[in-house]
Length: 417
Image (cartoon, rainbow, N blue to C red; front, side, top):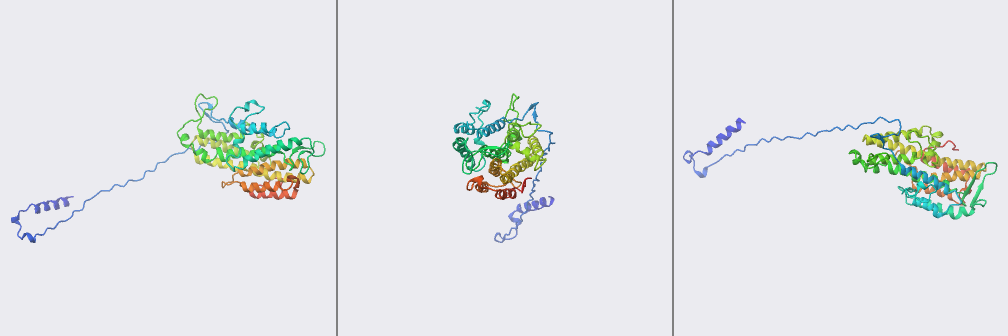
């Protein structure tokens, strides 16, 4: 700094000299101007790292969550739809049913013998195939039509190849089925189709999807309560918490929330068949699913979305196995019964398998894709429908179909041959 002050003083001194002091002519005047560099101090901003601690909740012992002493868990809509599904299954196996009644139950959520199911605003039809191909829901409507128009009028006829009616296996206690001309028992198609087309679809592609859960992330982060649980005088549940509960309800809606027994009374969908798979093909799968539901719900309250998504993925993969195992199982079961001459058993098993195959498109593997997409499912169903349908199949042909399913899912049921 002293150097710059000295130079400035010299410059001022030279500039202030009189003309008399300058000896040379003006034309010869020569001025030397020196530029003085300015020193500019530049301050660089150093990025600040903010660390946000996201808590990892300890897994609760069961699916029991409270706020201010009041439970925040409820899924009445899912419980109602499971009851509706069971009632629809019964209606699809009764010769007193009418097309108007079943359509009203399925598509309007009205006309149930259980009056508590009417007027709730809940429906099964609009939740069937909601996230999949637009071709799926109409399939259920055609099943209703064929059952009422062709099976009920033939109720007292003896069923045979190409002839609708009743078929009973010989011997005491032989099974009886009411089937269409292809051997389809419609209540079984309907129920097993809903296992994937409604329950699994709503859980996997609906309530536990990142799209739906993340759509309400801001509210969950800020503790905004969008719902009021029974027993609370004010909103006490975030939307994300409730969405997760609704997914839970499609599996446990008729079961004990904190101590599920599986195979719940009146449940004809996922809960029932999770029990079967847990007891045979994959012991322990039920606990894995329940624990993932529980920890995922705790993660939402803790705002730990990485943990939430990890649990959602476990649920999706494990629930899909229920459909994968059973779709193959019933092909092999149908074949074994045909070989044993038990055609009523075979028609029953193949009808269940048909519905489970339809449900395969509503599964999800670890890579996020289904076991089979809509086109692959339709191709497999077309094989079952060829000619006179179930009547034209053998143990060998059904074994081929069973293996195709096992190859696609990586799951081999215990009765495979």
